[in-house]
Length: 196
Image 1 (cartoon, rainbow, N blue to C red):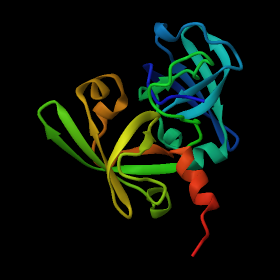
Image 2 (image 1 turned 90 degrees about the vertical axis):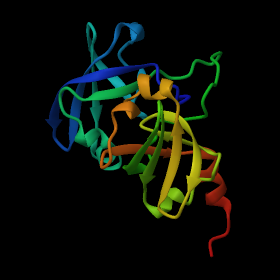
Image 3 (image 1 turned 90 degrees about the horizontal axis):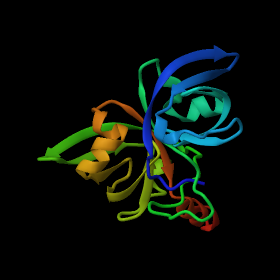
């Protein structure tokens, strides 16, 4: 379980094909030191397991299902990613409950700047937008955000300067692919509602 509060940004050092999956090696910043093999880490919001440690380089494996649902398939050496360690049992929940289970991807549709502030619109499949409500929560590349407007196949968020400075959203441009995890509460409500 995660909170959607990104702790640091890492850099892809290497990406290697391994059958139908990939092995990702990340250069992880010192503030995340202390990772162990078997630990989980959210990479752009996707929960993966550390399989090898070599100093500040941590290796992960992502299978075909993960690659089909996330933007991890698009990563290349040098790309920057958001990183978050799991929520400790006695930790503070500052964002919202983020599972690290990506529902699908969306695309940055537009970036509107107003001084240091930004409003971003994202285009998503209708099935994902149906799980969102204005003022509800969504995780974009692992970042817990509040939804502003929600339409049939798109939604918007308002980004403060701090979020733009410490996450990859400050680097995103129209056309970029992002990971989307809808609020788990909305998914359960939708599951139990009668279908038309």
